[in-house]
Image (cartoon, rainbow, N blue to C red; front, side, top):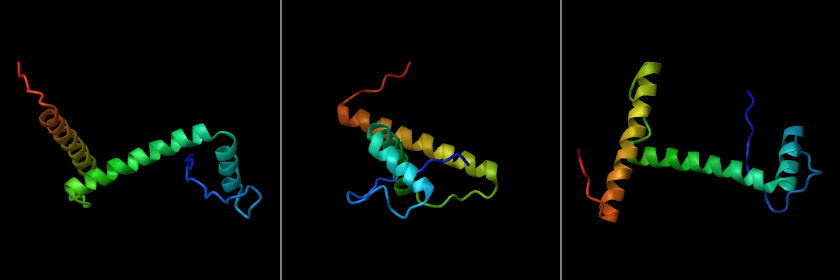
Length: 100
């Protein structure tokens, strides 16, 4: 499917282990080019943090039944979450809304 995994390795991991070829490839990428590995891993952590925040705010269940409605429900949750963040930051930083 063309998906690359970015899972950090334990400090005692060595490249000559019994892992699969994919594991060895990921380990050598981690060793040789850790900045790229770290940048990609950070993208993963951002996605997981966003998913966690949405679940905390709106719950884990998607209530719609058909696929299009499910996608629309998730989009609505994302928009609602972003609006709550904007309103929170406005109040936190003392920014008054100006409606034109």
